Every structure is written in C-alpha cells, then in structure tokens.
Amino acid sequence: MRNEMMHRSVLSDDILTLVRKRQPGMTGMLGEVQKEATESGVPIIPNETATFLNFFLKQIKAKNVLEIGTAVGFSASLMVEAMGEGSHVTTIDRFDVMIRKAKLTFEKMGISEQVTLLEGDAKDVLSTLTGPYDFIFMDSAKSKYIEFLPDCLRLIKKGGSVMLDDVFQAGTVMHDIQDIPRNQRTIYRKLNLLYDTVLNHPDLTVTILPLGDGVLLISKDVEEIELGI
Image (cartoon, rainbow, N blue to C red):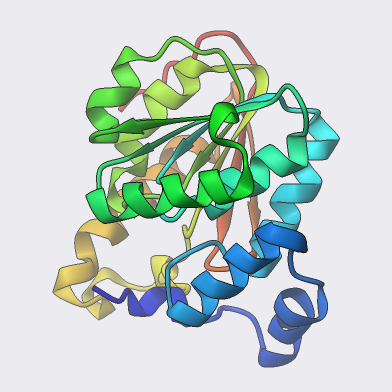
C-alpha cells in the first residue's frame, strides 16, 4: 500500500530540488538500482538521504552495519560500497517479495559475500544478535521503532550511531492528535513516544535532520542504556 506521507515534502520545492535533484545521484551499478527503483515507485531512501548516508559512513569509518528493513537492497548496497573492502552489512526483512529482489540486487552488485540477509520479523531476529555494530540503520515500520530501539542500543557499540528514517510523517508528528487520521494515530503516538524517550536522555546524543521525511540520528554515550519504557 502506498504511504502518502512519504510523498509529502516538509521542505520548500526549491530546497527539495537542491538536496534531491541537484546533488548527483549514485553512479555505476548502484546508480542503476537507484534509478530503476525510483522510476518503479519502489520505496527506497531518497537521494538526499542516500548522499548523507554515503558521506556519514565514510566519516565514521564504519565496517560492520546492521540494517532493519532491506526492501530491494539499495541502502544495504550503498552502505557496502561506502564502507569498502572488508565491510559487512547484516540486514533484516520479512517480506518474501523484497527478499527475492534484494538477493538479486546483491548478486548484481557482486556483494553477496558482504551481506547477510536475515529473513523474519525484526522483533524476533534482533534478540538473537550479539553485535557490536558500528552503525545501525532503521527503515521499517515506523510504529515499531520504539520497540526495536532497546535492542538496537544493546547492539550498537559505545560511540556508535543509530539512524532512523522517515520520522516526520510529513510533519504531522507536530500536529494535534485530533487532526491525525485515525489510521495514522498509532504511528503518531509511537513516534512521539520515541521523541520523548530519546531527546532528553542523559546518555544519548541526538540530532534531527530534514532529509527525506526526516531522520533521527542517535549516538550512544555509555555502554548500557536504560530507556525507561
């Protein structure tokens, strides 16, 4: 089902053109995957988020990444390409059609040996992992972010970062709940609980970025985190 929120920009058209279209897209085979997915309406991260992710992973020199929400494998492929030789991405997805497409993408990119695709519901898979990971990228069901976060903070190394995509709901997270359609209120409540939990937490460093439909970037400052949820 098409999520209309993903297609409502919180930026002006001019700025959106600058960050999404004036910035070059990915090149080579990765660019082909990006172009095909975009033209087919497959939900992948927009170009401004992809560009930031490529930049950020190089800056933190990440080598071991966990991803929740594989889709067609574009972001996992981007992360492997950004991190380079010796890097690895573990990615989780539960949808058969996406799993099949992602495997084809990894084969096409020639990175199958650098990607571990775990099939199943993230709430079940996360508890079986031990980490530590340098970076975790969440791009899955938005109402589940707050549920996945404790495991993600357990799995990330001290000083590592967790990036959560699409946290604005087209800006409606700041609206009164009475203005939110009933079928969107669970996402609204869970995203606001997420903000309430992390923004003033003493052991987390947090920033919000207006990329795509919003990015929440969390860094863990101590080994063990108590979220109080």
